[in-house]
Length: 209
Image 1 (cartoon, rainbow, N blue to C red):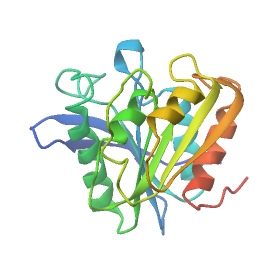
Image 2: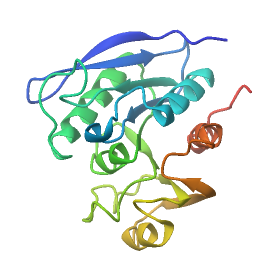
Image 3: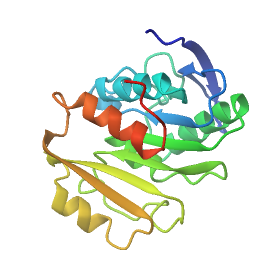
């Protein structure tokens, strides 16, 4: 069965308009915003990992919004290296929160996961971080000491942030659980269904498949 989506415009606190796709099933009790990987390496909202999560969550009757960071495709502005992109994620949460009155999760893949983990928003229920490149992007994350749950998915053969340095970077984080897909690399090419099922399961939704 297909999912019904429509394009939406997001407006950031610094005056940019971003493009996104929204699927809001009737009666959705949970919402998820998904952040895409690094635009310098071809990342956008149609990335295969982002798309797999988007479709699986929508099929599970979750309201889901994916968007292009500033400077990507038709989104205004210029890539900012991660800092300004926090405003983009916050704008996406505000947009989704205006559509549904439900708990919101902030998800991201790779660079998008790193950005997501630096966004603390009053409406957040928690975070989903797929292959966050914490070994390549060191520094304390805003979510680290936040009491809300953080679900982290790590690839056993991640080329950019292997399990050991990723675990070291998360040492001391509160309310954090980690799942490792042992056979996967950073791109999850053969494991998109596993990633999607993990996302659905992590927020407590029911996968109709």
